[in-house]
Amino acid sequence: MATSSPNVPGADLGTLRAALESGGLQQVQRLVHSLEPFDIAHLIESLPPAERKIVWDIVADEHEGDILVELNDEVRARLIELMDADEVVAATEGMELDDLADIVVDLPEAVTRQVVYSLSEQNRQRLEHVLSYPEDSAGGLMNPDTLSVRSNVSLEVVLRYLRMLESVPDTLDALFVVDRDNRYTGSLYILRLITREPQLNVADVMDPDVTPIHCDMHATDVARHFQDRDLVSAPVVDDSGRLLGNITIDDVVDVIQDQADHDVLSMAGLDEEDDMLAPVFTSAQRRAVWLGVNLATAFLAAAVVAIFKPTLEKVVILAVLMPIVASMGGIAGSQTLTLMIRGLALGIVQDSNARWLLFKELAVGFLNGLIWAAVVALVTMVFFSAWNWKVGAVIGAALAINLMTAAVAGFIIPLALRRLKIDPALAGTVILTTVTDVVGFVAFLGLGTIYLT
Image 1: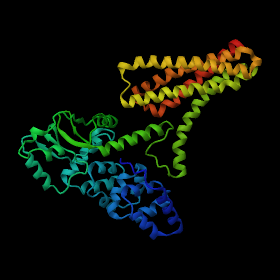
Image 2 (image 1 turned 60 degrees about the vertical axis):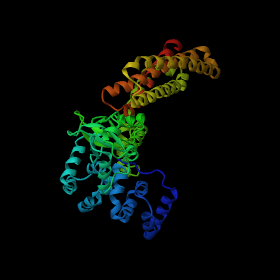
Image 3 (image 1 turned 45 degrees about the vertical axis):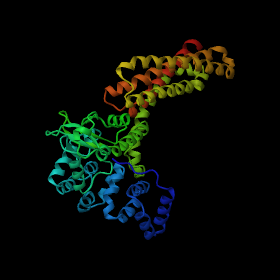
Image 4 (image 1 turned 90 degrees about the vertical axis):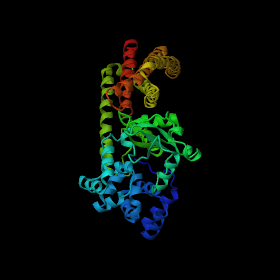
């Protein structure tokens, strides 16, 4: 999915809202028609649902397809519901196949059939091929409409071939060289094509060392492949090395943006494709599930505290200090968890260095545990001197235990979740908070029961 531009001036949205509220549809129309499709998409995403319909009705028919490509998935699906089948077919006409694949999945089945049947037989087969791959794979990202040449033809022939084409992609930086079985053998960069002698053959100037991307490679690995090699485009191949299509940098930028949104929002149980301005009931329903999960873990922590109720009744000061231990453990664990999730996403954390990283995080937890246990113990004795040194020693020891536990949990949880094929960014925080709360309370109240009662 393409991501709309975040750089639309705020004045445009303010002016548009003012015009909508005043009923000045001519002013709204002038403003909408003066913007590029990605700017219009951003404005639509920023409007409440009722006002979106007004703006969408104003959009020029020839721009509808370009705007749909730029929209958030949920917003796009809602707008498509407002369109009849013929309007959808017209909007998708001439759309690049990789963009069309993103939109087709949001269409009703009957409309999908109409869109597919409106394509040529060749494009229909190409679209079906793209749709056969997972959306977050190289096959799902690729554009099957790619340019390829043979290695035994001259550069002059290639140039004539390009001049005969009605259009070429804006991001075209290379042609892909294939053999007679359509197996990829190298890349012919446009710069070399236009600067070398036209009598030379493609084989003389092509780069055979450009590594193709396998169609099953995950989208995040594709983005890393582009980043590591500073690519603008890359060929996509199957198991036998046959050229299937290509991925360009604009697709990769979308992947990086989506991944960044996912990492931030999933920690709160939210989906990056959720509509921020969705109706109240819809948003409340989504968030209720995650709140319920958190409530269950909170009851677990409360049950642990209830076990030590007699201790809390005798030593009330423990109830006052108890949140410190849980809070410090949660923060320390979140630091390790965040680093681990990022390391896994970037491929830095591997089986070969996992043990070293575990001992490193354990050492960091131990060192921080000693430092902050001493600080907390000292502060506790100063402010609650009536309890002499025992309360300070108890909270200091509990804090040291919880910080070390947090380091280990922050390391192990994302690895375990990944093995279970569960997104660590989605479930890791809840599990970690539960562990640090339970261990912190047990350590603090348990030591309090032993030494202060």
